[in-house]
Length: 171
Image (cartoon, rainbow, N blue to C red; front, side, top):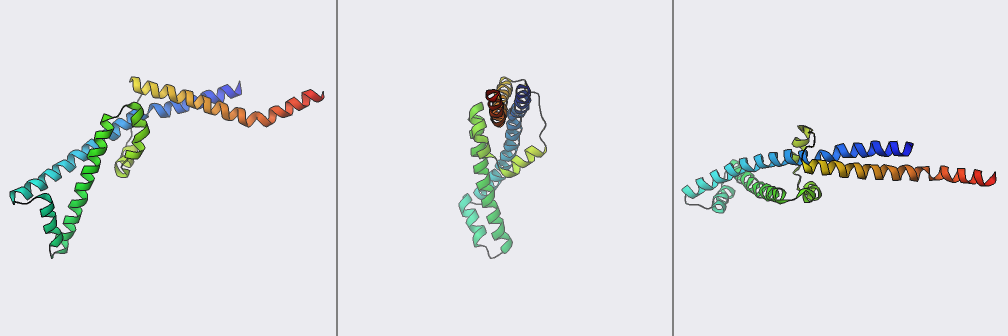
């Protein structure tokens, strides 16, 4: 009876936690999409300015790096990092948007950009799972939590059950 109660509480707890994953993933994807959109504007503006001056992006960045001015050289390094971040985040966004629910759960931790992931968690708003995906995650969470805690309680109770068996056999 106690084991079932503890397992049920564990199942409900994990159900609540896992049911929130689709909402967190959606909020993360929105933030990631916003970051990609902003970096795209910066990238396109840089490329447009370079093209208007008859330069490619790499040629324009080369000018920055060979400038005798430390500010310009640092600006070139900063822009190179911006372009790399744009490429990385765009690729991550494409993968997340093309992933199914299980793939997203398996791979989202690998995609988490620390800054975007942290800000998403800081501003995360829990939601009641009314989508099929949210309900499936809640169900899976309940089953995993119930079975996990049930097994743990049984394992922890093993030494006490042996004592009871020994007492019964001596009597």
